[in-house]
Image (cartoon, rainbow, N blue to C red; front, side, top):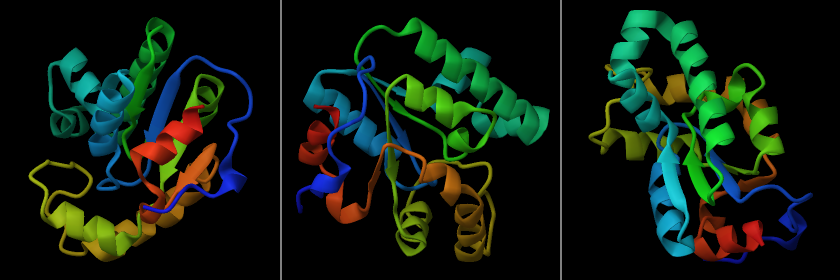
Length: 181
């Protein structure tokens, strides 16, 4: 993989060792979160899994019970809980919409390094079509490419507020290590 462009380095300011991974569903946030936590010997939290554990319900069930607004309220609550309770080095894979609601992006930027995995829609569609994971916002969609394009259009401005933006050819353990140094 190519090296990260120098224009993305160094990370501005000093914060606790937290790395927030953001991007669309299927961008690889959970995959890279697991890879990084092992390589860096940091803890890993997938925010959606954490929410499911705390609420004792799947993300799909939470959406069905509370709607998107109710889910986003819970998402903000648990994101804050993780940030305020974790003092260990931590990689956090955020839900696709996490940075787009409330002041979540600002909070993440103040409390760690935010990296946007900028994966093209055609890659997302391919990954999502071969994934076993249930994603409530995508369940049963026959228009997935058009839907993802629309959602990306709505979210991109938030995602691009991240400290670092990585396209697929720059996503590697080496480049993540450069980012956190």
